[in-house]
Length: 452
Picture 1 (cartoon, rainbow, N blue to C red):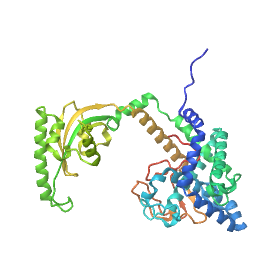
Picture 2: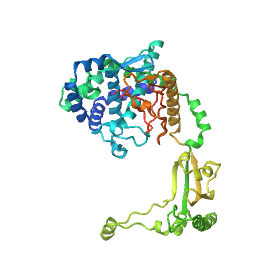
Picture 3: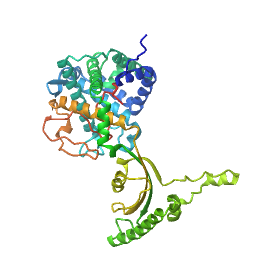
């Protein structure tokens, strides 16, 4: 009897995990989507608009070309499917931070300015994401057709149908009305099916690319050796001697800052000398920073003292930084920590940007156990992104109806690092990837699972 088990791929593990938790995830995902995306408002608006729409408008939405992506003619029906799906997925993912981003789901997105994209409203932002999603779907679809690559999406599509029925039940409306609320005023179970199937095929194709570009252990080790400083971790003691100014740094003169820095330099070098003679780091910190060493007293502490209960001890190594990734430490001390160090090395480093001196004592440098997985995932993501960029390169967008305002905006660079669109009239060579401020995968269909 052969007891050798088939090695499960990442895709196999993902499918198995999804099957085991399908019912729970479906309910939670649906509930989050309904709350975060403001579907109640969308449902009322969608149904009302449908009732007021003329037969001509409906026919135009279903038959006429709204935009073109490469050689593909996209109707308003299809565009709305991807638009609502993209928006709802994004809102669900970032529901907890929407108030901080200033986005109100009850107000027209076209009337709200995006906080990180110059001259761009939230409607423009979501339009751009939608176009990029359609570009990926069409490019991948053409590649699948040309190569003869096959995928079985029957199970995933059945799960989608079940989720739509569950959503309608939770909202207390018909399935037909729920389709309109989720995917636009003219959406039905029948006419959105090809769009959903295309999205599922894209997800399956991306999984395929991930498997194809999974690096070998040797490739991961080689990459790690070349980028150790980005992944290794260090333990070290740190004391910060900040310049003490009577005014704010903006108001203080250069002479005042220089004098304050000179004073802190003397104190830092004095501490360094004591450390080199064997003094304890934490004891010296208590000496040089007595205010920080004193435990704060609050009502709870007072009650504990009165009852005779022992007060929690202050952490012995309050200034010990443990398992800190080298790439995440302050730039001013990174070089010293990155260099070949041995346990017990001590230094003083000046940071003119922060107007302070660091006293550091090195403990050890260790390998980050999660580095290999992180490296592998990063290599996969980069390879897949590059491949999708290649596929979508020639899929330009033509704004047939002239509704995509973002295409007419001058090229800008947002705070999140995303590039705006060059003003090219009706056509724009848009990349197939979305680099939103959240650095999230905005281009995956909300009902399709992408690799986590």
